[in-house]
Image (cartoon, rainbow, N blue to C red; front, side):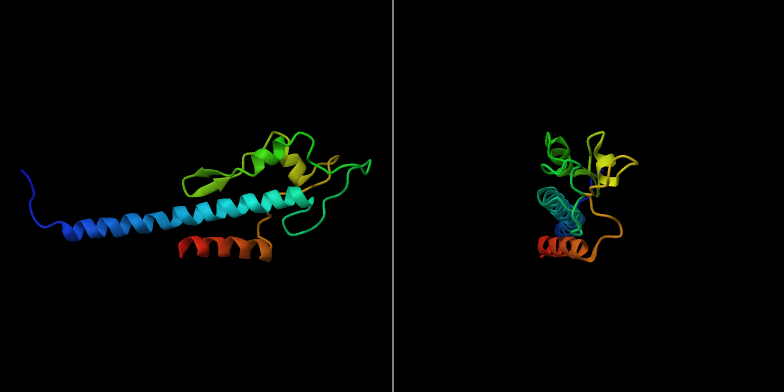
Length: 131
C-alpha cells in the first residue's frame, strides 16, 4: 500500500530541519578553527591564551615546547566527537599544559571559564559562520 499526495510542503519542512541541523555543526566548526588559532598563537608567542608569558627555560636559551613540534602539531588539530571538540595531545601534553612538581605550566589550551578575550573570539567566529 502506498501513500500518495502533494508532498511539496513536507519536502520544504525537511529542507528547513536539515538546514537548521547544520547550524550547530557550523558553530562547532567555527569554534574549532578559532581554537586552533588560539593554540597556534600560544605556541608562537610563548604565552597562555589569556596573554600571560610562559616561564623561560632554565638555561634561558631557546623557546619552550618547540623541540620536535609534535605537541604543537597535535594540539592545533581539534577532533570532532558529534557536536563536541577534543584536543588530542601527545602523552606529555597535559604535563606541559598543566605543569607538575618538576615542570612549570606552559598553558596553551584555553582555561574554563574562558578568559573574556578568548570567549569573545569564539562568539565572533560563530556569528560570522552563522551569518
